[in-house]
Image (cartoon, rainbow, N blue to C red; front, top):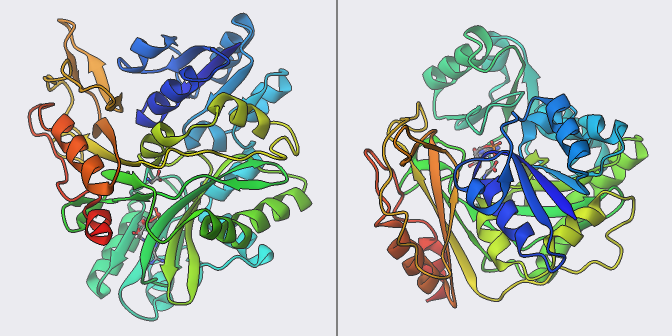
Length: 421
Ligand code: AMP
Ligand code: GLY
């Protein structure tokens, strides 16, 4: 069977590698892929928004399953287009993908389904936004796709006004509303569940690091590192959270005639009053999935295929390696405000056995060298029998991989190490 992974980032590279490990021995294709993916899959130079191109490729190659990685083509209806042409695809259709496409829609679904989340108001002008803020810190979120950068935690009035101005007047991410949200305190958890339209089956828990600098300082990024599992969140606790959060959403969307097939990613805050949803994503977390997939012992291809049919996950149980996984993100100079392209990357040849290096933002330079091509450049994932061993192995593998202006947080999974002592 052939499987086609749509996308060009570290998430898609991790998916390509995990699918290639399937005992079904699929042939893995990718569009557009990247230079790292090209080593593990047959790549086609077709952009993720070229729906005709992707559908034609799937037909021409008789692809058995298309796996859509990023949110943008999901929100724009790629799965609907493939379904119309009779192609099985992993990921929600457009209507269900609105859970990520619009924060206001996600809040409405949560209210209808009784899912705990931060209190909120949607506003369309700066003064209304200022009036909606009850206390600081205040959370201001652009109501559309913004690549992880549409959230500002304002500590005071000046900062809040500037953020509202940027979203609503300067339209940094295009036209759209702003959601003013209650600030939640606690520890964050990423819990992803595979969904077959009827049922939500949790994956192992993970945590990611959103800020650019050590100690959780600086602006938000798409994610600078991750680890799995998470102390205190065993399989039973993950199942409880799934019953509280993911399953009611799946039930609500099914009731509305827009069932959710794919992966539902809940970004949660574990507050004193229980878990509350910060955001939903309708695709695998990046870089969480880079830490999760090397621990997955079940056949990913089988699981993703089963998500495409109503009730297909009946009886599914995911098996996980008991070891810990730590993923480090190597980012380019200037990230997250900008990205530095064309910096030559050295040290990629000497990756130790058992360490997975996935490409996120790389390109092949004129002389064949691998160069930076984006904010997040590479991901390095290592496994270890405890958090310290996984962390040490990840840094030992990442340190020799260098390029001009490389940014690498030094404190990824430190919290897990401290807790395991
Ligand atoms: P989001 O893109 O919605 O996940 O937000 C990015 C990050 O901002 C989250 O991972 C949190 O660290 C922080 N954040 C978002 N919403 C809240 C909230 N209501 N309370 C506290 N922190 C938040
Ligand atoms: N790691 C955060 C995200 O994928 O949105």
